[in-house]
Length: 629
Image (cartoon, rainbow, N blue to C red):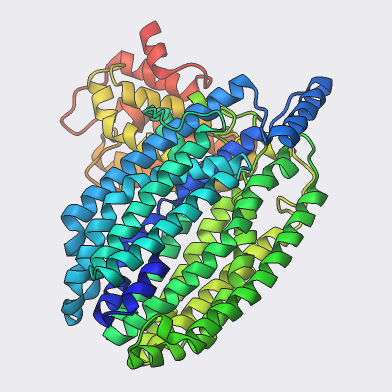
């Protein structure tokens, strides 16, 4: 849609064309930050549909399912699974609606400020047009994010016709609206914004209707509970890091292009929108991998050989598509530049980046194939997950090793790409320098993802599922509750057993910690060293002050060390038992018993709570132990 806006606006004022650069950062690139909604939805739905029953019943139901697919393109889902999927979709619809409303408020009240800060004082002439575009496009934020959730749910059910129809109709509406409002009525950039906004609302509504036809209620919105919010955070965190790294890099490209002048940013806007058009054409490869890989890796008819064959086919298609798209995308601005703009200075800037433009596009579809496979859940559905309400059986399937790897690798690519951008800009390489930095960014993503998937320990080569039978220890599930507990510890000491937040936090940590021995052992090897440092530090302080330490002492280093020590004390790894014994003794002092210099002596019931909390089995809560006192 933004490419249509670029083509139509480029026939008029090159200043309005340049204004699309910073404007699309707030309207389009910011929306990619919320791509975690799309990825989480399609993954969750596809994972549930990959599940089956045991024995002959499962085989019979699979036959019925396949028969229904052939006859009516229907998908058989058990009533319980379908209700759970419906609830998850409803929760994600609520999250999408909430995020959309927040972005609507942001663009309304802070859009002008953000554009001014991004464009700088040298480009003041483009700010009014850019702000007009942003304010109008911002009205569609709720419809865009809700539509993404509905679209991804349909794709997770392997229904691509509904989203395809919605995108076709919305693109037609946008194209006709741009021509009528801009070319005939002369509304300029405002007319393009209205046409795009209306087309996005129509697309969102059609995607909701497509989901309703699958037997789900896309108008049902459920408010998530606290556990569900934490689960969504767990699902979203790696994908969020990945997407925000991409958005930040492309935004930095526009920022550096904007600093080079109006003609440079106008040319950059044209080339970037052409690349965006080519990139979208490769997205179905990623969605295909996310929709079909779960069944081949963890489903009823599990076959890693077929999964590898599918990936090989996708990469082959992606390579061919990349060369084709790169050729078409390069020849379009080279042979027909007047389609996009009539300003000769802008056209000359476009010619300078044709080679890196081709190199960046050629590898993009293959990247979609590889990263789409890495986004597949990292453990089989329904294997020993911790119950978390309606997210049961999929709470442990996300944010696995490959997602963590993808987020870390993307962060590394962003860091190196940023350094390259700054270096090329400072050396005066101009707009081609920005695009060669993009080439490095794209090819680094390709090689890192390819190496990960070709690893013998990767998800496509390991036939051993036993390593998935324990829940991954997610750092956020330990860190967040402990931070809450640290804040409320003083309240626990003053009013024992009355803090529901801290009690819940402790229970939550006991549920999550120590389920993946390999990962937890590695973490505790580091924390064990910190625990020894804590012990030494505590003994020195005890000797100097002759007082029992309080965990929330004025010294920040005491807080950090004590926090690490408490974290290490909850796990029970055989070769760290001795360290745990020591840390539990220190934790006993720091956790509840002690106080400031002016504090009163500890009460006996607090000592009982501390002893119980540090020695009880996970199923017993500290609060219940205090109540039993």
